[in-house]
Length: 160
Image 1 (cartoon, rainbow, N blue to C red):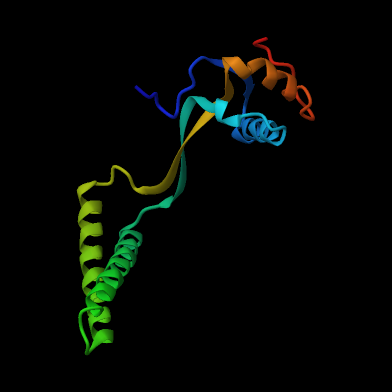
Image 2 (tube, rainbow, N blue to C red):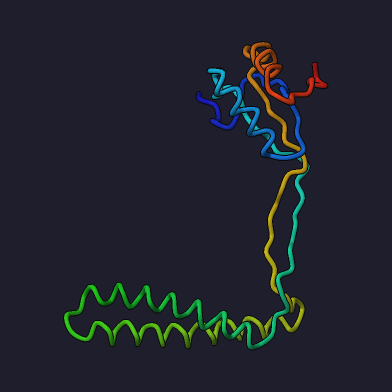
């Protein structure tokens, strides 16, 4: 039976960082030192969800968003249809874009009306870790710690 590619057999903590870039820098440094980095993994813990509000939703903004997404879908469908027609390719593409825009605006406005003002804003969401731990296979942990001591700006591992 084979294990998951996202698991190490007997992992040991090598270092803990507050940001992913520092953890990545550690593994990159080990790779530069010819360490077998396939025995390493970076684990993000203490997850948090961040939501950045990007604006207020209005009926007009929802309608424009629906039109734009409908136009793109219509363009895609039109291009597919144009592969099977010999005449009026431009007319096929334009008509599918218009139908897509109409369908898109209707669907967007219906969805917005059904929300009844419970979420009158747009946002982007990201899940991030607050801590990143570099783990290494136990059989190579001593070698990794020794190499890591040569990393410029390296701090001693509190787990040693």
